[in-house]
Image (cartoon, rainbow, N blue to C red; front, side, top):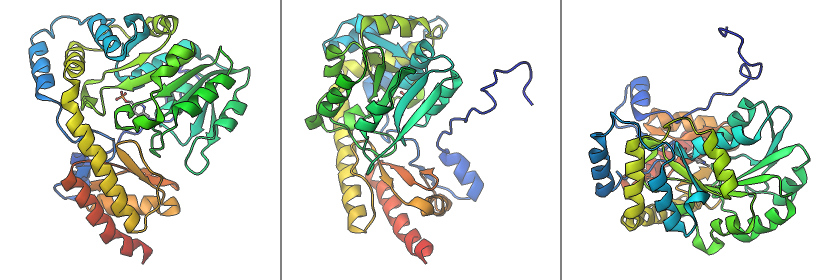
Length: 362
Ligand SMILES: *Cc1c(COP(=O)(O)O)cnc(C)c1O
């Protein structure tokens, strides 16, 4: 039983489920060498320049850092050719998505998004007392006609993750542009690009749409391509009025000094991350080809993960893999999301998957 007069929606709120850690799985099954392919983390440690910046910043943790991350916003603005007034920094892009929800949503409002998508959206929306309207994927792709049709006068936000989590499917800028033309100007469209750096540049850069539509917000993160998941720093690019409102609900000093220093060094040294991003994209191609050769079904991914559409067998695969030390992310009855990691870890996954398959298909 809750203590105190908890808001009525809290009881029904789903709890965001993080991927299991390797240590938890090892303890549970009495095994060693478990590997975590469950949270789309970068298997490579962050760059030496970033690690050095974190060490240097450690001497200043007795002080509060810059609440509004002025220097980092300027660096990000410079990287993208926008003004610092168009950039907000938050504690992960998940933190920014939460801030966006608290700026726009009140009970009775709806948020429209294709589903399945990022697990945090329903939690954030429901926490505001608003309602999610889920638009089913068609052949793993967004149905943007149906998404536009689901927008009503009660709709405040639309969430579009591209590449989408967990499917990995990327939506082109041309499709997003066409969608934005059909959505009323007072509905804010959030393009969640947590996996931008792994995506196919031939499909366009969604940042172009921020210049074209005042109601378009693009969110990105240092967690995935830059290997800073544990430090919590992400950003968004949007109209300065949106940025000002989002900054109003930033928890004081939520982006700590180590995170700011690390992100600044990551921006300054961004070329140094490219070899790792390229290696992960190459591994994604290799793993995908091997899986297809073995007859597995899945949508072509532009993220740092693949999504095996195992339907009813999803949980059995998840459990059999886990027992053997391979931790993946299951969506019961639908599919298994598997992070692309180092060559060695990917090979272990492929080997164990091929061992497990005959056991399950019996
Ligand atoms: C990982 C992820 C995020 C959040 O990343 P942060 O670590 O909070 O920056 C946001 N959206 C999607 C779709 C993700 O997969």
